Image (cartoon, rainbow, N blue to C red; front, side):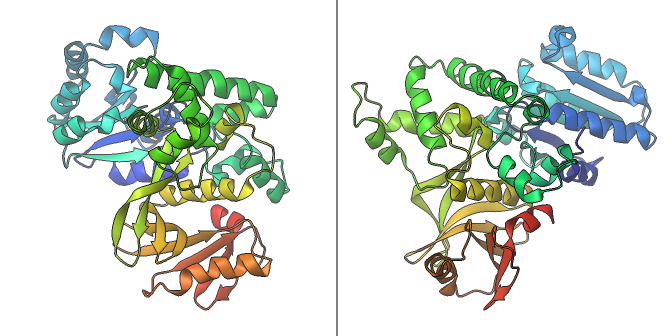
Length: 401
């Protein structure tokens, strides 16, 4: 088992705090395993197993507990003394009226409550209203590159391993399967991730009749990671040579469904000079680059610049803060990160800046930013130098740091 240390550290920090711990993320990203690891830590540190209640609602033996009143009564029955009890509810969205369950358990002083779910309904406007100020969310993604290296300890060539990482899947189970058979890993991605999320989490939940159009939008967006897109230009491209037209409003809905299922993550545009969000165009990033292999013609080692951007985007999310695509006058900054302490960071990402034209383009984007917040230029070049206050870093070093 690969330790998910960055997430475990967050759980340790909020343990016993009077808030609901909500772990979200796409299916099969390791939420159940993370909870198991945290449960084992609690036991190792002296918590008695009988003071831990762990229920996964995808398991057959827990189906009778999916009525919230039955489940509530069962949990309260097991919390018999005044000792702290840790309650883990895995895939809680499968419980009917789970919001009422969560609110009821939260009022009990001796319960420390942890819940997971695989779609953004857990943080929908209705639930967020009910839990205002009473929850903290941890968004779990597939393996970071640092975690990925732990699965391939025998691989001593870190550059070769990174090429594999940006061309393959980093879902925990897919990584395990790929070590014995690459085609098995792709079958797993198609059947256990893509089909399940698209058909079950999206098509069935939202009662979509034209799944073909949904697949067309997915293929277009997967092929456009790191590029500015809008519902209008997606509709224009998809309707060019098609008799079945797809509307602007339908595309807006599909993009919303895909982000709520944690397949896509948006990076809205931020005007650095005007200090405001822009409503036109944004970038989308894909939760797992391996998913491109089953929806587009994804040649190994092709489109590396955008793949590298995708990797950096998710690493920035893991490190904390809101991540935007930046605009500074007529220049584009790949990422503007608004940190929780009101600090800000700027990032440019390039596969290499060894040629003069690329170097000037990447550096010039920073030149007219008037504040003194840190500026980073990430590439696969090996020199880590400071250029007029701009820190140039090797992206692999940065990912492993």
